[in-house]
Length: 235
Image 1 (cartoon, rainbow, N blue to C red):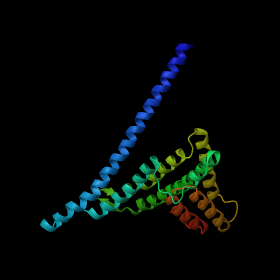
Image 2 (cartoon, one colour):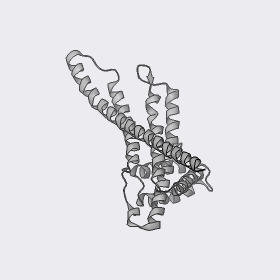
Image 3 (tube, one colour):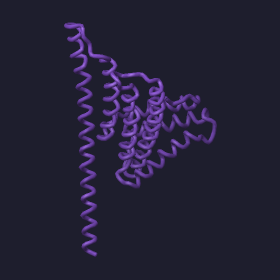
Image 4 (cartoon, rainbow, N blue to C red):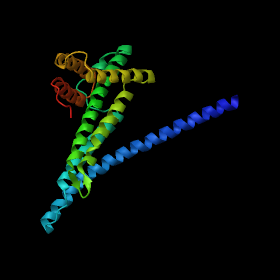
């Protein structure tokens, strides 16, 4: 029995170490990709301008590449900021509370922010599908929609990390996840006409923002609510 317990404990520790090692590698990869994208954004114009002036040559689609590298940096940078708990917020109202009240306020604000982020992820998927049907080419044989996949991927990473930071316990994170799912479900199947729910939804978003929800979820959430209230596609 003791051997089995020791074996199980050792297996669990090894599993935790492997997971921790994978996360460290994944985080290092994120940081490297952001650095390379930033370097590309700086180098492309610096190389393209002298070439054009000296030899009349130009790097194909250099301006478009810089634009999409900016998108890449913005989305992956947001994911890194969420990982480090450094997403900008308009208010830190939860910090004025203490104990259980502070925990509940943080859980609520992060759940609302995660719901908004997941809806932005859905909107991004719809947008990428439309771009794929358009068939536009970024450069060479690389279609534009491939570069734009960073939109849903970035929003998905941010949403996961918002839920992770909603509580220090798995039980708290499960509650936040359930609240997030409930918000999305109510948006998909509203219990009353949408136009009657716009104001309550904006008030909930305002409360979450006051309690520390990130700035981008306040702005993006307000846009989503207003489009949703007018039955306009969120994409």
